[in-house]
Length: 240
Image (tube, rainbow, N blue to C red):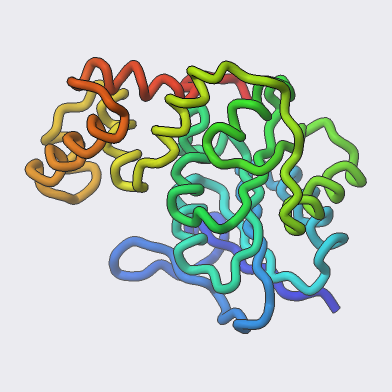
């Protein structure tokens, strides 16, 4: 018998309970010994295809589902024995490769396998820069999806084409930011003021300024304009 699926997302869509803080809770407890796999894709039919592929590889796994980036981030924070994240690049709430970077920052020890309809060579290379271990094209047959999932679970990282070392260096610096620092940087990229970013993240303006100082130090830049240029390494606007 297959292990149960646990959906995480808006209660109106997934019929899950919502706590007083506005976060999401698992609809059932997960045994510590059972591995968990998060399938994060906003298209229900393709999400089912990914679940089927994951089940073929690990029939004992608990499958967590998320339909937005925020729900995916909540899922990885709550998950027990999380072994793999399958992430759609174009999840609602994600821009470019920001979803990959944010999830990798939250759970750096968990492999992230990117799923997208984007041009495979470019998407695979860019995703790897931000912590992904591999890439699945949405036009791939089920056996190829299973192979990629198996490789990721076994720690085998897929080969990618040679990339620009200078761009890789910038991307590596961005990928080294903490989750909150990444959110602050994305806010700066969106042209938001410190007080607006503080409101968005429910932190003080002084904390935003402290994060900006840390961001500029990590990115080796001198001001917000240079930080914005570095943030563009996140691939904002890619078709996926």
